[in-house]
Length: 472
Image 1: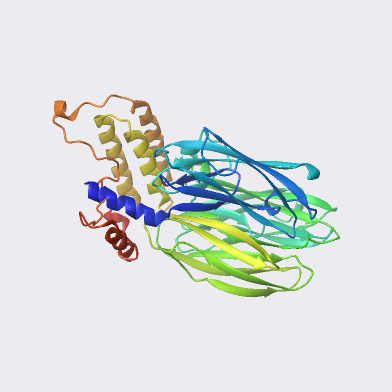
Image 2: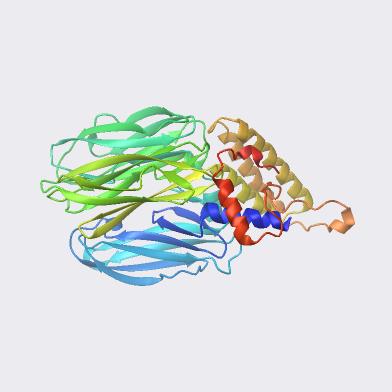
């Protein structure tokens, strides 16, 4: 049994990697492997939306309870023509699986009258996950265990510059591998021709594009927000909200460039190609050359590697590409990295395969860690029943059962403090260590770790692997 568990742990290591490098977003919650490192990065001045002038940015990071990190206080001086990518590293060495912390990152620029904060959370777990939560949550565990990104919502670009009175169009994108009916509403002080939409998503479909046509009013900065809700789904993550900025000015956009990627966060079930796109906005007054590459884990295939694009002045270019995952319960980070005029900018996206399974296992392990034998058996039975249904149902059709199971697991936590009855007094066989304890992974007992790793790498590339092989 120890060899099986070792093999499973090593498999998770290769599926997930030893470290994250995540783009800072408000409401960012993520897991990190035990005895590992996560990196959250942000770009100055882009991520605080400042003007062209040089400024000193005072950065602070706090964690409650205190969590080891390499940036607590720092001052960075930069401007729009000298961007800086700033990392914050969180360490899990000495932390136990299941430990969590909230964190707050604040940037202040007194000369600009600026103060902005980002909040999120971190947990130690062998089940890798990233969730961007817009609503209130009780803590990191709730955010990670009860949010599944069935669909992704986003604007093609984070901002757009137009002149007063000018007609304009914006692209709002929705994408999902699940069969969903999604209602979308748009709110803004800007005059728009249409503000309500309904669309259908499904297996094999790419992004659905909603065109927002409008007319700019007086000079100023306007926010355009969109809300999308999947019908028949009560999960908080079945409602998405995004916002973009419309800059109305006679002077045009601020000099520079930006890069965005879509979808930003998406969970899928089938190991089929997923269509992605990135958009480069050239806001320079002249044509510019952009060297662009895609970085991704080794077990994620990508149709795009590296290329160079010449983009005319004050225009943009969108490039579509596909990625294909090779692991049934994998987590992937996809980065589009662009270099132009001695500056580098990054856009990040996250793709999860069978995130619902990982979330259920994480919740169940939390209950089982301190539960009695009877409670463990009940948890195993509920998880096994749900999983059997999940493997046979159409993706997105069993969200009520998933929400109900997570609610049941949450209620079971109240019983997890019961005293375990010694096995030698009951004569019962011990319950498995976790709902994954009976996953069959062919690991040769006693083979050196190197051979196990090579074996797992080979197995991950086999097309015949299926979740049907996972048993409890």
